[in-house]
Length: 537
Image 1 (tube, rainbow, N blue to C red):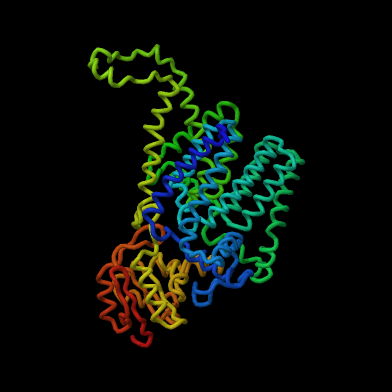
Image 2: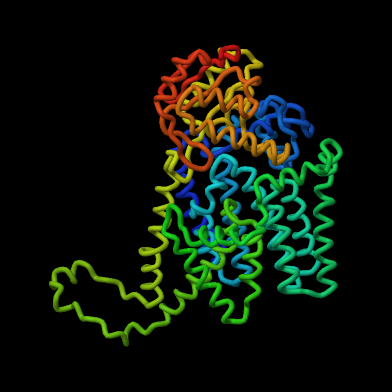
């Protein structure tokens, strides 16, 4: 079967994304970033087959399970089939990202009626590590599914409100919205903003309002088995706890300043897609189509960084449009009328006879130049960025080989009810890998309320900055964790903490070995584990 132009260009976009994902997989024997909490949730679902009430291992009392569960049920199926959890996240996230590339490609084709522009959008979305980093890493399996369903809702909303797509488009938006509510809270909010914005910019009629309300209500009905169960078990306030802890919804000018800084900062790569997105926006507005960039910007402006992956919704289509317009302008130049030097006399005949240059059109010359100057280096830069594993790379490994070895020792050599204060980002992976309780954790505690989240985050930050045993013991006491801790897990040297790197001085380990409050029980080149002696003063 011959591939049409649509499918050929989609294949090009997918291949560019595959190149970056292969570079990531080749260098990462363990998934990047955070994912232990998601795996612990999926394991709880796989074991019980129902919606868990709490997730054990994170804090001494566990954390309430109020997270949208669809992604975990999908993960649970693989776990029940015997698939290794870490391998599922390592390989599953890049596969889901390929689905995102395909959907963004199709959305851009719908918006522009140009598979070539869709291909450019797909290349940007699939290779831009700065934007898709949290879709490639371990948590990208759940986040990626949420992103996929968000795009389904946005596509349906555009087709209905802008193109008069009728009931089928309305059903697509409703189903997409319902599935994203069941999968990821941030992407659910972005999808809601996109559906509302589609009505605002294209159809402000009462009938359009009724359609928007139908999408909202229909999606909530689809997700009702989950949110009704959670509200009945934990109370409706738990949803406000989760939404408020991270400050996701934009409500200040400083947030808009952060949005501008994020947009202009390419991070680890040359940020030409953002530049062309600005140009694409200007061109769309100049052509009288201000609605399109306004609609695409709505989810991004509502939910500012650190949710930078939402920028793909804006930068990929509009960046592709800006690049396509630039190509059209340059390709339209008459090269024969340009005053170019004639190098024929300067090149020996034997060279021209051996190498007969092809007779290229202006379009071909510009296309080759774009690939050589922009697209090729961009993909290569992203391949290099994706292959980094250190704390200062875009895809650092939170639980490296030393961490995993230490956690294996803890699982084998400590009591099953041992409780450990883990310093650094590996605390999120600890309950899944060590099968022991991680006393001080940040992620997951947002569902217990902002006060609990702030307490754990502050204690973790303070421990990361400690230089001696007195500071460690004082922090445990100050934040009221001392009575809960049996062991303290301390990295050595440079490690991942939060969203960047941190360093533990050798002086801290020396101080803890000399202190009566701590007894060294295990160490390797990257980790030291100390038993905490509560009775010593």
